[in-house]
Image 1: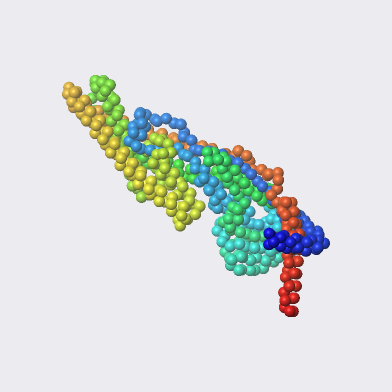
Image 2: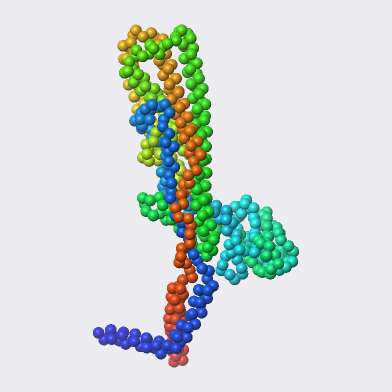
Length: 529
Protein backbone atom coordinates (compact mmCIF):
# COMPACT_ATOMS: atom_id res chain seq x y z
CA UNK A 1 0.00 0.00 0.00
CA UNK A 2 2.82 2.38 0.76
CA UNK A 3 4.46 1.68 -2.64
CA UNK A 4 1.15 2.35 -4.41
CA UNK A 5 0.69 5.64 -2.57
CA UNK A 6 4.22 6.67 -3.53
CA UNK A 7 3.50 5.85 -7.19
CA UNK A 8 0.27 7.91 -7.12
CA UNK A 9 2.07 10.86 -5.53
CA UNK A 10 4.88 10.59 -8.09
CA UNK A 11 2.36 10.55 -10.98
CA UNK A 12 0.51 13.52 -9.52
CA UNK A 13 3.76 15.37 -9.26
CA UNK A 14 4.56 14.76 -12.93
CA UNK A 15 1.10 15.90 -14.04
CA UNK A 16 1.19 18.98 -11.84
CA UNK A 17 4.69 19.77 -13.12
CA UNK A 18 3.46 19.75 -16.71
CA UNK A 19 0.32 21.75 -15.86
CA UNK A 20 2.50 24.57 -14.55
CA UNK A 21 3.60 25.07 -18.16
CA UNK A 22 0.05 25.29 -19.56
CA UNK A 23 0.93 28.43 -21.48
CA UNK A 24 3.60 26.51 -23.37
CA UNK A 25 1.00 23.83 -24.24
CA UNK A 26 -1.41 26.53 -25.39
CA UNK A 27 1.18 28.18 -27.65
CA UNK A 28 2.09 24.82 -29.26
CA UNK A 29 -1.64 24.03 -29.67
CA UNK A 30 -2.16 27.29 -31.57
CA UNK A 31 0.99 26.84 -33.69
CA UNK A 32 0.01 23.24 -34.58
CA UNK A 33 -2.89 24.67 -36.58
CA UNK A 34 -0.36 25.89 -39.15
CA UNK A 35 0.74 22.42 -40.46
CA UNK A 36 -2.88 21.24 -40.18
CA UNK A 37 -4.11 24.10 -42.36
CA UNK A 38 -1.24 23.54 -44.81
CA UNK A 39 -2.19 19.84 -45.02
CA UNK A 40 -5.86 20.63 -45.68
CA UNK A 41 -5.07 23.23 -48.34
CA UNK A 42 -1.96 21.92 -50.09
CA UNK A 43 -2.47 18.16 -50.10
CA UNK A 44 -4.38 17.18 -53.31
CA UNK A 45 -7.95 16.10 -52.76
CA UNK A 46 -8.17 12.35 -53.29
CA UNK A 47 -11.36 10.71 -54.60
CA UNK A 48 -12.61 7.14 -54.49
CA UNK A 49 -13.84 5.56 -57.73
CA UNK A 50 -16.01 2.44 -57.88
CA UNK A 51 -17.32 0.22 -60.70
CA UNK A 52 -18.99 -3.21 -60.71
CA UNK A 53 -18.99 -5.90 -63.40
CA UNK A 54 -20.60 -9.31 -63.91
CA UNK A 55 -18.42 -12.08 -65.32
CA UNK A 56 -20.35 -13.92 -68.04
CA UNK A 57 -19.58 -17.48 -69.04
CA UNK A 58 -19.20 -18.64 -72.63
CA UNK A 59 -22.46 -20.46 -73.33
CA UNK A 60 -22.92 -23.38 -75.69
CA UNK A 61 -24.31 -22.57 -79.13
CA UNK A 62 -27.25 -24.89 -78.49
CA UNK A 63 -26.76 -26.83 -81.76
CA UNK A 64 -27.90 -30.45 -81.73
CA UNK A 65 -25.97 -33.35 -83.17
CA UNK A 66 -26.16 -33.53 -86.96
CA UNK A 67 -26.99 -37.15 -87.70
CA UNK A 68 -24.74 -38.84 -85.14
CA UNK A 69 -27.67 -40.71 -83.62
CA UNK A 70 -27.15 -41.82 -80.04
CA UNK A 71 -23.39 -41.63 -80.39
CA UNK A 72 -23.23 -39.03 -77.65
CA UNK A 73 -24.56 -41.38 -74.99
CA UNK A 74 -22.35 -44.23 -76.20
CA UNK A 75 -19.28 -41.95 -76.12
CA UNK A 76 -20.10 -40.99 -72.59
CA UNK A 77 -20.38 -44.65 -71.61
CA UNK A 78 -16.83 -45.17 -72.87
CA UNK A 79 -15.60 -42.51 -70.41
CA UNK A 80 -14.77 -39.78 -72.90
CA UNK A 81 -15.24 -36.46 -71.10
CA UNK A 82 -15.90 -33.09 -72.65
CA UNK A 83 -13.81 -30.02 -73.15
CA UNK A 84 -16.78 -28.01 -74.37
CA UNK A 85 -18.37 -25.20 -72.46
CA UNK A 86 -16.57 -22.99 -69.99
CA UNK A 87 -16.66 -22.24 -66.34
CA UNK A 88 -15.20 -19.03 -64.93
CA UNK A 89 -12.85 -19.15 -61.96
CA UNK A 90 -13.54 -15.82 -60.26
CA UNK A 91 -10.23 -15.80 -58.35
CA UNK A 92 -8.29 -16.27 -61.59
CA UNK A 93 -10.16 -13.46 -63.32
CA UNK A 94 -9.53 -11.15 -60.34
CA UNK A 95 -5.80 -11.83 -60.66
CA UNK A 96 -5.94 -11.11 -64.40
CA UNK A 97 -7.81 -7.83 -63.88
CA UNK A 98 -5.28 -6.60 -61.32
CA UNK A 99 -2.23 -8.02 -63.13
CA UNK A 100 0.66 -5.86 -64.18
CA UNK A 101 0.02 -6.74 -67.83
CA UNK A 102 -3.58 -5.45 -67.79
CA UNK A 103 -2.50 -2.28 -65.97
CA UNK A 104 0.29 -1.75 -68.52
CA UNK A 105 -2.21 -1.99 -71.37
CA UNK A 106 -4.45 0.57 -69.66
CA UNK A 107 -1.50 2.90 -68.91
CA UNK A 108 -0.24 2.81 -72.48
CA UNK A 109 -3.72 3.43 -73.90
CA UNK A 110 -4.22 6.50 -71.72
CA UNK A 111 -0.59 7.65 -71.86
CA UNK A 112 -0.49 8.24 -68.09
CA UNK A 113 3.03 6.88 -67.79
CA UNK A 114 4.03 10.40 -68.91
CA UNK A 115 3.48 12.57 -65.83
CA UNK A 116 3.16 16.38 -65.96
CA UNK A 117 3.43 18.60 -62.87
CA UNK A 118 4.58 22.04 -61.89
CA UNK A 119 7.73 22.49 -59.77
CA UNK A 120 7.13 22.09 -56.00
CA UNK A 121 3.57 20.85 -56.65
CA UNK A 122 2.02 17.62 -55.40
CA UNK A 123 -0.67 17.73 -58.08
CA UNK A 124 -0.16 15.68 -61.25
CA UNK A 125 -1.80 17.17 -64.33
CA UNK A 126 -4.11 15.19 -66.57
CA UNK A 127 -5.14 16.65 -69.94
CA UNK A 128 -4.56 20.22 -68.71
CA UNK A 129 -0.76 20.43 -69.08
CA UNK A 130 0.39 23.24 -71.42
CA UNK A 131 2.91 20.92 -73.09
CA UNK A 132 2.64 17.44 -74.54
CA UNK A 133 5.41 14.85 -74.79
CA UNK A 134 4.90 12.29 -77.56
CA UNK A 135 6.74 8.98 -77.79
CA UNK A 136 6.25 6.25 -80.38
CA UNK A 137 4.55 3.08 -79.11
CA UNK A 138 7.61 0.84 -79.55
CA UNK A 139 9.82 3.16 -77.49
CA UNK A 140 7.35 3.61 -74.66
CA UNK A 141 6.62 -0.14 -74.53
CA UNK A 142 10.33 -1.02 -74.23
CA UNK A 143 11.34 1.84 -71.92
CA UNK A 144 13.59 0.56 -69.12
CA UNK A 145 14.50 3.77 -67.29
CA UNK A 146 12.77 6.85 -65.91
CA UNK A 147 13.43 9.93 -68.02
CA UNK A 148 12.97 13.38 -66.46
CA UNK A 149 12.50 16.70 -68.22
CA UNK A 150 12.80 20.10 -66.50
CA UNK A 151 11.33 22.63 -68.92
CA UNK A 152 11.41 26.43 -68.82
CA UNK A 153 9.29 28.23 -71.41
CA UNK A 154 9.56 31.91 -72.32
CA UNK A 155 8.44 33.55 -75.57
CA UNK A 156 10.99 32.59 -78.22
CA UNK A 157 13.02 30.27 -75.98
CA UNK A 158 12.38 26.80 -74.59
CA UNK A 159 15.06 25.34 -72.29
CA UNK A 160 14.99 21.62 -71.54
CA UNK A 161 17.13 19.69 -69.04
CA UNK A 162 16.80 15.93 -69.59
CA UNK A 163 18.15 13.21 -67.33
CA UNK A 164 17.67 9.51 -66.54
CA UNK A 165 17.23 7.96 -63.12
CA UNK A 166 19.23 4.74 -63.38
CA UNK A 167 21.68 5.61 -66.15
CA UNK A 168 22.76 8.88 -64.50
CA UNK A 169 22.66 10.62 -67.88
CA UNK A 170 22.11 14.40 -68.24
CA UNK A 171 21.91 16.82 -71.11
CA UNK A 172 20.54 20.28 -71.99
CA UNK A 173 18.58 21.46 -75.02
CA UNK A 174 17.45 24.87 -76.20
CA UNK A 175 14.76 25.46 -78.83
CA UNK A 176 13.33 28.62 -80.32
CA UNK A 177 9.97 27.05 -81.15
CA UNK A 178 7.95 23.87 -80.81
CA UNK A 179 7.43 21.12 -81.86
CA UNK A 180 10.96 19.90 -81.24
CA UNK A 181 12.54 16.44 -81.12
CA UNK A 182 14.71 15.40 -78.18
CA UNK A 183 16.89 12.40 -78.91
CA UNK A 184 17.95 10.31 -75.91
CA UNK A 185 20.08 7.37 -76.96
CA UNK A 186 18.26 5.67 -79.83
CA UNK A 187 14.84 7.03 -78.82
CA UNK A 188 13.11 10.20 -80.00
CA UNK A 189 10.81 12.29 -77.81
CA UNK A 190 8.68 15.01 -79.42
CA UNK A 191 7.78 18.07 -77.33
CA UNK A 192 4.97 20.39 -78.41
CA UNK A 193 2.39 22.81 -77.01
CA UNK A 194 -0.82 21.04 -76.05
CA UNK A 195 -3.00 24.06 -76.92
CA UNK A 196 -2.50 27.32 -78.78
CA UNK A 197 -2.78 29.58 -75.73
CA UNK A 198 0.35 28.11 -74.13
CA UNK A 199 2.72 29.31 -76.87
CA UNK A 200 2.90 32.92 -75.64
CA UNK A 201 3.09 32.23 -71.89
CA UNK A 202 6.00 31.97 -69.51
CA UNK A 203 5.98 28.92 -67.25
CA UNK A 204 7.98 26.03 -65.90
CA UNK A 205 6.96 22.40 -66.10
CA UNK A 206 8.37 19.03 -65.08
CA UNK A 207 7.71 15.84 -67.04
CA UNK A 208 8.50 12.27 -66.10
CA UNK A 209 8.36 9.41 -68.61
CA UNK A 210 8.17 6.14 -66.69
CA UNK A 211 8.31 2.51 -67.86
CA UNK A 212 4.74 1.21 -68.01
CA UNK A 213 5.60 -1.69 -65.70
CA UNK A 214 6.87 0.71 -63.01
CA UNK A 215 3.72 2.79 -63.31
CA UNK A 216 1.58 -0.35 -63.13
CA UNK A 217 3.38 -1.47 -59.98
CA UNK A 218 2.65 1.91 -58.37
CA UNK A 219 -1.01 2.03 -59.47
CA UNK A 220 -1.70 -1.51 -58.25
CA UNK A 221 -1.42 -0.23 -54.66
CA UNK A 222 -4.48 1.97 -55.20
CA UNK A 223 -6.51 -0.59 -57.17
CA UNK A 224 -8.68 -3.19 -55.44
CA UNK A 225 -10.66 -5.98 -57.11
CA UNK A 226 -13.14 -7.66 -54.75
CA UNK A 227 -15.86 -10.26 -55.21
CA UNK A 228 -19.27 -10.01 -53.58
CA UNK A 229 -19.20 -13.60 -52.29
CA UNK A 230 -17.70 -16.98 -53.15
CA UNK A 231 -20.88 -17.94 -55.01
CA UNK A 232 -21.17 -14.70 -56.99
CA UNK A 233 -19.52 -13.63 -60.24
CA UNK A 234 -19.96 -9.92 -59.52
CA UNK A 235 -16.72 -8.00 -58.98
CA UNK A 236 -16.17 -4.52 -57.53
CA UNK A 237 -13.29 -2.41 -58.84
CA UNK A 238 -12.10 0.32 -56.47
CA UNK A 239 -9.47 2.95 -57.18
CA UNK A 240 -8.30 6.21 -55.59
CA UNK A 241 -6.81 9.23 -57.37
CA UNK A 242 -6.73 13.01 -57.03
CA UNK A 243 -7.82 13.56 -60.65
CA UNK A 244 -11.54 13.00 -61.15
CA UNK A 245 -11.36 12.42 -64.90
CA UNK A 246 -8.27 10.21 -64.78
CA UNK A 247 -9.82 7.86 -62.21
CA UNK A 248 -12.97 7.42 -64.33
CA UNK A 249 -10.94 6.92 -67.52
CA UNK A 250 -8.66 4.36 -65.88
CA UNK A 251 -11.46 2.09 -64.63
CA UNK A 252 -13.35 2.40 -67.92
CA UNK A 253 -10.26 1.59 -70.00
CA UNK A 254 -9.25 -1.27 -67.70
CA UNK A 255 -12.63 -2.98 -68.17
CA UNK A 256 -12.56 -2.41 -71.94
CA UNK A 257 -9.03 -3.83 -72.23
CA UNK A 258 -10.00 -6.85 -70.13
CA UNK A 259 -12.92 -7.63 -72.47
CA UNK A 260 -10.72 -7.13 -75.53
CA UNK A 261 -7.99 -9.37 -74.07
CA UNK A 262 -10.43 -12.19 -73.30
CA UNK A 263 -11.99 -11.93 -76.77
CA UNK A 264 -8.55 -11.97 -78.39
CA UNK A 265 -7.55 -15.09 -76.44
CA UNK A 266 -10.80 -16.93 -77.27
CA UNK A 267 -10.56 -15.90 -80.93
CA UNK A 268 -7.04 -17.29 -81.18
CA UNK A 269 -8.13 -20.58 -79.59
CA UNK A 270 -11.13 -20.89 -81.90
CA UNK A 271 -8.98 -20.16 -84.95
CA UNK A 272 -6.72 -23.07 -83.94
CA UNK A 273 -9.78 -25.31 -83.58
CA UNK A 274 -11.07 -24.17 -86.98
CA UNK A 275 -7.74 -25.04 -88.59
CA UNK A 276 -7.77 -28.50 -87.04
CA UNK A 277 -11.42 -29.15 -88.00
CA UNK A 278 -10.84 -28.04 -91.60
CA UNK A 279 -7.91 -30.46 -91.90
CA UNK A 280 -9.98 -33.30 -90.45
CA UNK A 281 -12.90 -32.55 -92.80
CA UNK A 282 -10.56 -32.72 -95.79
CA UNK A 283 -9.15 -36.07 -94.61
CA UNK A 284 -12.61 -37.51 -93.92
CA UNK A 285 -13.85 -36.40 -97.36
CA UNK A 286 -10.92 -38.22 -98.97
CA UNK A 287 -11.68 -41.39 -96.98
CA UNK A 288 -15.41 -41.10 -97.75
CA UNK A 289 -14.65 -40.77 -101.47
CA UNK A 290 -12.62 -43.99 -101.33
CA UNK A 291 -15.46 -45.84 -99.56
CA UNK A 292 -18.09 -44.59 -102.02
CA UNK A 293 -15.91 -45.50 -105.02
CA UNK A 294 -15.46 -49.01 -103.62
CA UNK A 295 -19.22 -49.28 -103.09
CA UNK A 296 -19.90 -48.12 -106.64
CA UNK A 297 -17.38 -50.61 -108.05
CA UNK A 298 -18.92 -53.39 -105.95
CA UNK A 299 -22.41 -52.63 -107.31
CA UNK A 300 -21.20 -52.60 -110.91
CA UNK A 301 -19.24 -55.83 -110.50
CA UNK A 302 -22.17 -57.72 -108.97
CA UNK A 303 -24.88 -56.06 -111.11
CA UNK A 304 -26.82 -54.86 -108.01
CA UNK A 305 -29.62 -52.32 -108.19
CA UNK A 306 -32.32 -52.62 -105.45
CA UNK A 307 -30.37 -54.15 -102.58
CA UNK A 308 -32.18 -51.86 -100.12
CA UNK A 309 -35.29 -54.01 -100.56
CA UNK A 310 -33.34 -57.15 -99.69
CA UNK A 311 -31.67 -55.53 -96.66
CA UNK A 312 -35.07 -55.04 -94.99
CA UNK A 313 -35.21 -58.82 -94.48
CA UNK A 314 -32.71 -58.58 -91.68
CA UNK A 315 -35.43 -57.33 -89.30
CA UNK A 316 -35.50 -54.76 -86.55
CA UNK A 317 -33.02 -56.54 -84.29
CA UNK A 318 -30.41 -56.62 -87.02
CA UNK A 319 -30.94 -52.87 -87.65
CA UNK A 320 -30.36 -52.05 -84.00
CA UNK A 321 -27.20 -54.14 -84.03
CA UNK A 322 -25.91 -52.35 -87.12
CA UNK A 323 -26.65 -48.96 -85.57
CA UNK A 324 -24.75 -49.98 -82.45
CA UNK A 325 -21.79 -51.17 -84.56
CA UNK A 326 -21.73 -47.87 -86.47
CA UNK A 327 -21.75 -45.89 -83.27
CA UNK A 328 -19.07 -48.12 -81.76
CA UNK A 329 -16.83 -47.71 -84.80
CA UNK A 330 -17.31 -43.95 -84.66
CA UNK A 331 -16.30 -43.88 -81.02
CA UNK A 332 -13.30 -46.12 -81.66
CA UNK A 333 -12.22 -43.84 -84.52
CA UNK A 334 -12.60 -40.76 -82.33
CA UNK A 335 -10.57 -42.39 -79.57
CA UNK A 336 -7.78 -42.98 -82.10
CA UNK A 337 -8.03 -39.36 -83.28
CA UNK A 338 -7.79 -38.15 -79.70
CA UNK A 339 -4.78 -40.38 -79.04
CA UNK A 340 -3.02 -39.14 -82.21
CA UNK A 341 -3.80 -35.53 -81.22
CA UNK A 342 -2.32 -35.97 -77.73
CA UNK A 343 0.79 -37.82 -78.95
CA UNK A 344 1.64 -35.00 -81.38
CA UNK A 345 4.40 -32.89 -79.72
CA UNK A 346 2.98 -29.79 -81.41
CA UNK A 347 -0.20 -30.19 -79.33
CA UNK A 348 1.51 -30.70 -75.97
CA UNK A 349 0.20 -27.44 -74.48
CA UNK A 350 -2.87 -26.99 -76.67
CA UNK A 351 -6.43 -27.44 -75.43
CA UNK A 352 -8.23 -30.60 -76.53
CA UNK A 353 -11.04 -29.57 -78.92
CA UNK A 354 -14.51 -30.51 -77.71
CA UNK A 355 -15.14 -32.28 -81.03
CA UNK A 356 -13.71 -35.46 -79.49
CA UNK A 357 -16.41 -35.85 -76.86
CA UNK A 358 -19.76 -34.73 -75.46
CA UNK A 359 -20.30 -32.46 -72.51
CA UNK A 360 -19.74 -34.11 -69.16
CA UNK A 361 -19.58 -30.98 -67.02
CA UNK A 362 -16.69 -29.59 -65.01
CA UNK A 363 -15.79 -33.01 -63.52
CA UNK A 364 -14.56 -34.47 -66.84
CA UNK A 365 -10.81 -35.15 -67.06
CA UNK A 366 -10.48 -33.34 -70.40
CA UNK A 367 -12.36 -30.33 -68.97
CA UNK A 368 -9.98 -30.19 -66.00
CA UNK A 369 -6.97 -30.62 -68.33
CA UNK A 370 -8.09 -27.71 -70.54
CA UNK A 371 -8.73 -25.52 -67.48
CA UNK A 372 -5.24 -26.30 -66.20
CA UNK A 373 -3.77 -25.37 -69.62
CA UNK A 374 -5.65 -22.05 -69.60
CA UNK A 375 -4.44 -21.28 -66.06
CA UNK A 376 -0.86 -22.20 -67.06
CA UNK A 377 -1.08 -19.90 -70.11
CA UNK A 378 -2.39 -16.99 -68.00
CA UNK A 379 0.36 -17.43 -65.40
CA UNK A 380 3.02 -17.61 -68.13
CA UNK A 381 1.69 -14.38 -69.70
CA UNK A 382 1.65 -12.56 -66.33
CA UNK A 383 4.96 -13.89 -64.94
CA UNK A 384 7.75 -16.23 -66.04
CA UNK A 385 8.71 -19.91 -65.81
CA UNK A 386 10.46 -19.39 -62.45
CA UNK A 387 7.20 -18.38 -60.76
CA UNK A 388 6.15 -20.97 -58.15
CA UNK A 389 2.48 -20.72 -59.17
CA UNK A 390 3.48 -21.35 -62.82
CA UNK A 391 5.57 -24.39 -61.86
CA UNK A 392 2.71 -25.77 -59.77
CA UNK A 393 0.32 -25.22 -62.68
CA UNK A 394 2.80 -26.98 -65.00
CA UNK A 395 2.93 -30.01 -62.68
CA UNK A 396 -0.86 -30.06 -62.55
CA UNK A 397 -0.98 -30.09 -66.37
CA UNK A 398 1.41 -33.08 -66.53
CA UNK A 399 -0.63 -35.03 -63.94
CA UNK A 400 -3.84 -34.33 -65.82
CA UNK A 401 -2.20 -35.32 -69.12
CA UNK A 402 -1.40 -38.72 -67.57
CA UNK A 403 -5.02 -38.93 -66.40
CA UNK A 404 -6.23 -38.18 -69.94
CA UNK A 405 -3.93 -40.89 -71.35
CA UNK A 406 -5.27 -43.33 -68.75
CA UNK A 407 -8.81 -42.34 -69.68
CA UNK A 408 -8.05 -42.96 -73.36
CA UNK A 409 -6.63 -46.40 -72.55
CA UNK A 410 -9.68 -47.32 -70.50
CA UNK A 411 -11.99 -45.97 -73.19
CA UNK A 412 -10.20 -47.97 -75.88
CA UNK A 413 -10.52 -51.14 -73.80
CA UNK A 414 -14.22 -50.51 -73.24
CA UNK A 415 -14.76 -49.73 -76.93
CA UNK A 416 -12.87 -52.85 -78.05
CA UNK A 417 -14.79 -55.02 -75.63
CA UNK A 418 -18.12 -53.56 -76.73
CA UNK A 419 -17.29 -53.93 -80.44
CA UNK A 420 -16.15 -57.52 -79.89
CA UNK A 421 -19.44 -58.35 -78.23
CA UNK A 422 -21.43 -56.58 -80.98
CA UNK A 423 -19.54 -58.38 -83.77
CA UNK A 424 -20.05 -61.68 -82.01
CA UNK A 425 -23.78 -61.04 -81.96
CA UNK A 426 -23.61 -59.96 -85.60
CA UNK A 427 -21.90 -63.20 -86.51
CA UNK A 428 -24.62 -65.14 -84.77
CA UNK A 429 -27.33 -63.21 -86.64
CA UNK A 430 -25.54 -63.54 -89.95
CA UNK A 431 -25.39 -67.30 -89.53
CA UNK A 432 -29.18 -67.31 -89.29
CA UNK A 433 -29.45 -65.75 -92.76
CA UNK A 434 -27.54 -68.35 -94.78
CA UNK A 435 -29.93 -67.77 -97.58
CA UNK A 436 -28.65 -64.24 -97.98
CA UNK A 437 -26.03 -64.14 -100.74
CA UNK A 438 -22.49 -63.36 -99.69
CA UNK A 439 -22.44 -60.32 -101.93
CA UNK A 440 -25.25 -58.76 -99.86
CA UNK A 441 -23.25 -59.21 -96.68
CA UNK A 442 -20.30 -57.48 -98.35
CA UNK A 443 -22.67 -54.71 -99.39
CA UNK A 444 -23.70 -54.20 -95.75
CA UNK A 445 -20.04 -53.76 -94.78
CA UNK A 446 -19.59 -51.11 -97.48
CA UNK A 447 -22.72 -49.25 -96.36
CA UNK A 448 -21.63 -49.37 -92.73
CA UNK A 449 -18.22 -47.88 -93.58
CA UNK A 450 -19.97 -45.19 -95.59
CA UNK A 451 -22.27 -44.28 -92.70
CA UNK A 452 -19.34 -44.15 -90.28
CA UNK A 453 -17.48 -41.65 -92.44
CA UNK A 454 -20.68 -39.64 -93.05
CA UNK A 455 -21.33 -39.49 -89.29
CA UNK A 456 -17.79 -38.23 -88.63
CA UNK A 457 -18.12 -35.71 -91.45
CA UNK A 458 -21.39 -34.33 -90.04
CA UNK A 459 -19.87 -34.21 -86.55
CA UNK A 460 -16.95 -32.14 -87.84
CA UNK A 461 -19.33 -29.83 -89.70
CA UNK A 462 -21.28 -29.30 -86.48
CA UNK A 463 -18.11 -28.40 -84.61
CA UNK A 464 -17.14 -25.99 -87.38
CA UNK A 465 -20.52 -24.25 -87.20
CA UNK A 466 -20.28 -24.01 -83.40
CA UNK A 467 -16.81 -22.48 -83.68
CA UNK A 468 -17.99 -19.95 -86.28
CA UNK A 469 -20.92 -19.09 -84.00
CA UNK A 470 -18.51 -18.49 -81.10
CA UNK A 471 -16.23 -16.33 -83.24
CA UNK A 472 -19.14 -14.12 -84.29
CA UNK A 473 -20.55 -13.63 -80.80
CA UNK A 474 -20.33 -10.08 -79.46
CA UNK A 475 -20.84 -10.86 -75.77
CA UNK A 476 -18.28 -9.30 -73.41
CA UNK A 477 -16.78 -11.38 -70.62
CA UNK A 478 -17.27 -8.48 -68.16
CA UNK A 479 -20.76 -6.99 -68.39
CA UNK A 480 -20.86 -3.52 -66.89
CA UNK A 481 -23.36 -3.39 -64.04
CA UNK A 482 -22.36 -0.06 -62.53
CA UNK A 483 -20.25 2.29 -64.69
CA UNK A 484 -17.31 3.95 -62.89
CA UNK A 485 -18.45 6.77 -60.62
CA UNK A 486 -16.97 9.02 -57.93
CA UNK A 487 -17.97 8.41 -54.33
CA UNK A 488 -19.40 11.38 -52.47
CA UNK A 489 -16.91 11.47 -49.61
CA UNK A 490 -13.27 12.21 -50.59
CA UNK A 491 -10.51 10.05 -49.13
CA UNK A 492 -8.26 13.00 -48.39
CA UNK A 493 -7.31 15.41 -47.06
CA UNK A 494 -9.29 14.33 -44.00
CA UNK A 495 -10.15 16.81 -41.25
CA UNK A 496 -9.94 13.98 -38.74
CA UNK A 497 -6.29 13.40 -39.65
CA UNK A 498 -5.60 17.12 -39.20
CA UNK A 499 -7.26 17.08 -35.75
CA UNK A 500 -5.26 14.01 -34.71
CA UNK A 501 -2.08 15.73 -35.89
CA UNK A 502 -2.92 18.83 -33.81
CA UNK A 503 -3.48 16.73 -30.69
CA UNK A 504 -0.25 14.77 -31.19
CA UNK A 505 1.83 17.90 -31.76
CA UNK A 506 0.20 19.61 -28.76
CA UNK A 507 1.21 16.73 -26.47
CA UNK A 508 4.48 15.47 -27.97
CA UNK A 509 6.34 18.77 -28.48
CA UNK A 510 5.77 20.32 -25.00
CA UNK A 511 6.18 17.04 -23.13
CA UNK A 512 9.29 16.15 -25.12
CA UNK A 513 10.79 19.63 -24.68
CA UNK A 514 10.15 19.72 -20.94
CA UNK A 515 11.49 16.20 -20.50
CA UNK A 516 14.69 17.00 -22.40
CA UNK A 517 15.05 20.25 -20.47
CA UNK A 518 14.75 18.46 -17.10
CA UNK A 519 17.11 15.73 -18.28
CA UNK A 520 19.76 18.25 -19.35
CA UNK A 521 19.40 20.15 -16.06
CA UNK A 522 19.95 16.99 -14.05
CA UNK A 523 22.96 16.02 -16.19
CA UNK A 524 24.53 19.50 -15.80
CA UNK A 525 23.87 19.43 -12.05
CA UNK A 526 25.54 16.06 -11.61
CA UNK A 527 28.43 17.13 -13.82
CA UNK A 528 29.06 20.22 -11.61
CA UNK A 529 28.96 18.14 -8.46
